[in-house]
Length: 276
Image 1 (cartoon, rainbow, N blue to C red):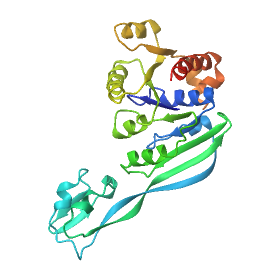
Image 2: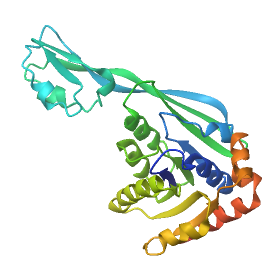
Image 3: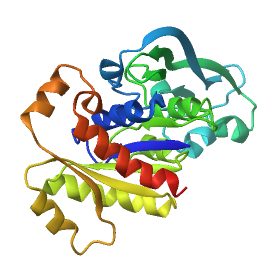
Image 4: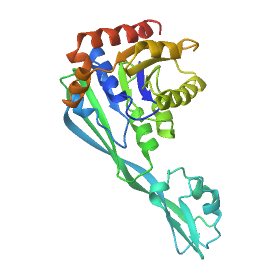
């Protein structure tokens, strides 16, 4: 069983709630927010393993390349460009798809491995389970590739929590793709609800089962009013309170410190788990 925790925008509290869900259910944890992973500050795993992840990138033979430019025209990510009769690679843009090699009439393109990032793994006493963190190479655009490699390592016979990237990028979709259940975390602001609708549309188009958790609500009545004419209602509304904010700043897991948060999350998620 895989639960992906996502949000339409940053700052909604996605990681805060992902850590709490993992703590409530003692689940294995995958931090797929590879551009800026920070779940470890809450889960405090004892890292014992680090695995480098590489991706094949093209190498162009100057002796064989005649500068025809077919590869530059076919590259969907604009990673290849030509100046005069020489083809160059912008490595951070390359997705290693192999198309350039296939279309090259001179067979001038081979591939070599380049670093994408690392996967750090360790045991967390907070959740009594393993935590896996993806670290993308700074400046790289290959976050989706690193996420895909991490997803391959998820054991399907365990309960696993994914902390996905915020927003609605390809990387966010890659974190939603393996999920049996998606938890959509929403900040109850005009921007938050707008971005929620975009993410919700993606989740629906992918045919995923999901629930909505509204976080940092100043007025529960206003939130309920927003969802009044919506088909999908909020499964849980968490209030904006100073004590929650202070606990976050101290790196504490909300479900571990506050019994009401623990009980509410357990109730909301358990209902979905039992219906799977």
